[in-house]
Image 1: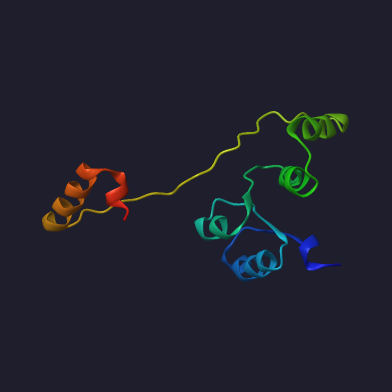
Image 2: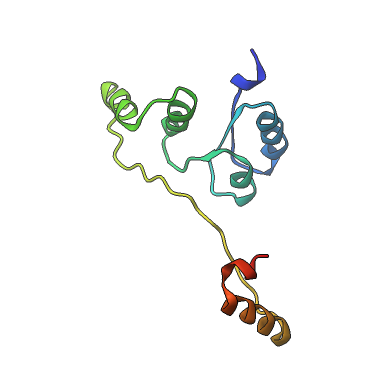
Length: 118
C-alpha cells in the first residue's frame, strides 16, 4: 500500500509523531478528541460518541463524496446522520503587555491594518 493511501486516527500525544509522518507522506490524519496538540496536526477532527463518525471525513475528503451522498449511505444502513456541525475552531488567548508596547501597537492600528502587520 502506498503511503498516500494511509488514514490514521488518534486521540492523544502518543499519536503526534505518527500523524506528522503520515501527513508528510500525503496520507490523511483524523483527530478523535479535542486535544489541542493533536487537533493542530490532524487534517480533520471528529468529535462524536459513535465510532462510525470517523467515516465522515474519509468519505468527504478521500472519496470526495458530498454531504447528500454521505447522509444517504448512513440512512441506507438505518443510521440517520442527525447532527453534523462543520466548524473551524481557533483557540485564542491574549495577555496584557506593557503600556509602552501597547501604545506603539495602538498607533499602528490607527494607521490601518496594513501597517499593523507589516
